Length: 314
Image (cartoon, rainbow, N blue to C red; front, side):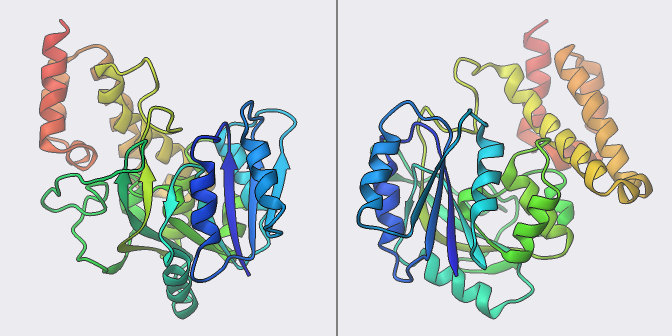
């Protein structure tokens, strides 16, 4: 059985395109579980219209707004499938997305979570491309090169520093769903938590084939908050994200965290780096450049921008 878990909040503008793309898959899905988080637009009306001709759509409405982390958890929890595809409300799936990912999952029992690549599109649905950077893949989100259509494991240590894959790129098997619900925490985004849990068991894989279009617009849930496009927020984000990852590891695997000095060093570095950025401490930032964790956290250019930021704000 194939399930789709979709979290919706005020998605009227793009919801039809997304639903159409799911319903037109070459391998049909058995259920589309939609949890609406108190939308105040026409999202509910649109979904109910689709339900009239598509019995596999199951709609749930929250009595109070849960926020995207809790809303996705509820959607996943309500899914009954052996495979659960995570889905945003504003993307567009290519017709073969389910078929390709299902085939890999069916023939690779070691894979608990599979993420695919994607193509960017703007608010009007026009595809656009980013210039590939050397040594990167997945539209420069994954800091390793992967050949076109390559299928590779992503290690737990890699997810200790960054999250490389959106939830809407993922399909989970039943074991991954169980672990996610068992260890759920709001310490970090749901997709990063899923990646951590699966990679901890050597079960996270990346397929470098674009199977959907990821829509970028001013109302994306995750990104630079509206009205806060300030330099300090950008300079702090990676360290704050890594700190969230370390806190999550400490919460889920406390004994492992206690025994692994590298996790503790990452936590300490992030706290010190956040302080250095907030205080515009140029000397401390220069000294931190000798720390390999800084190089793991940020590129050379980003580290240079940290220094320029500390100097320009004095």
